[in-house]
Length: 355
Image (cartoon, rainbow, N blue to C red; front, side, top):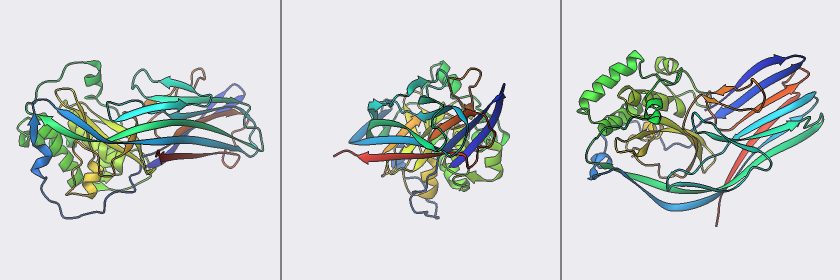
C-alpha cells in the first residue's frame, strides 16, 4: 500500500510544508487459489497448557534505509526526515549494530513506535543533494504457535484497553456490520476467544477481496463499502472484529526481507502471548496456514504495531499525526510554497543476508 499526505502550515513569513510517504504492499503473495477449503484442523490443535511460540531457523540481515533529498532550486531553511527504527521483539527479532549516522532516536510514549529524526538546516542548498541513512542488523527467526488448552481471562491494563478500543477512522469495533459478523462468529466459536480469532481470520480471508493495492490506508467504513482492500486494510477489518469481542489486536507494520512492504495482524491470547495472523496471505492461499505463524517466506522485519502515530519533528507546535509509519516522513520549511519539481525525496531500503 502506498500513498502520501501533504499538509501546509504558514509560520510568520516562513512556509512549512509537510509530507509523509507510507506503503504496505503485499505484491509477492502466493498464487491465488480460488477454491476455498476448510481449515486444516492442525491449525488449531491444542497441545499445550499455555500458549507458546517456537522461534527457529535464525537468519541475519544487514539493513540500510536512506532518503536522498534533491534540491533543484528551493529556498530551504529547515528539513526534517524521519525513518522508522524496529525494536527487539521476543526471540524472533533482534536489532543490533544500529548506526543512525547523526540522527536522533525517539520513542513515542503512546504507541511505543521508535524512529530516527534527522534535522538539516539550510541543507541541501539549491543545486545540491543530501542523503540521510540508517543502518542496522536484523536477526530474524520464523515462528510457529502452539495454543493453550484453556481460554482464560485477560489482565486489565493500559495495553489491553488500548488494543480493544477504537482507533478511528481505521479501527472501529462498534461499527454495526462488524458487530453483526462478530456476534455470529462468537456463537460459532462457543465463546472461545482463540477459536473466535481463528474463525474471524477465515471469515475475512474468504469474504473480502484483495484490491486497491498501493493506494493507502482507508477508513474502515470505506473498506467495508468496497468489500475489501490491500493488506493493511484487510487487516483493519480483522482487528475490528477481534476488538469487538475484547480481544486485544493490532497491526504489525513492516517489510519482508525481499523488500516488499507488508502489514498483518497480531492478537493477544488470554495467557499473554502475541500471536500473528495474516489474513492477506490466507486470502490469496486458502489452503495455506498463516494463523499463529509466518508464511514459508516468513522472514520479516516489524517496524511498529499501530496506526495514528504522533511524530515529534523537533519543531514547536508541529507534531503531525501520521496514519502509518513504514517508509519515511519529510517536512520542509522555506520561503516558497512552490514545492513540486523544486525539491524531491527518493527513498530506498536494502536488506541483504549476512553469510
